Image 1 (cartoon, rainbow, N blue to C red):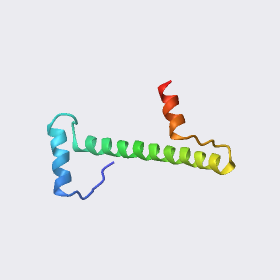
Image 2: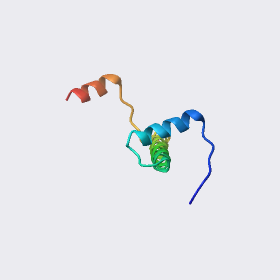
Image 3: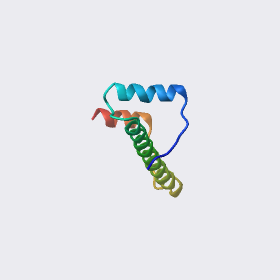
Image 4: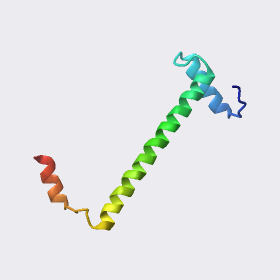
Length: 78
């Protein structure tokens, strides 16, 4: 499938350098790799949000136990 996109000269230069450097065989490969990285990064961000939501739910429910800095430091040294 062909798609037409507008790129800044700086972006196009970057893509050309990647192809010329041999890491990618075409400009399309560079763009596909960039999109894959964006998708992976967004998935990680979504997972982080889910984990934070779970932590907040624990705190609000009273199940979370807070510890002081000294306790954390002691536990890390064990």
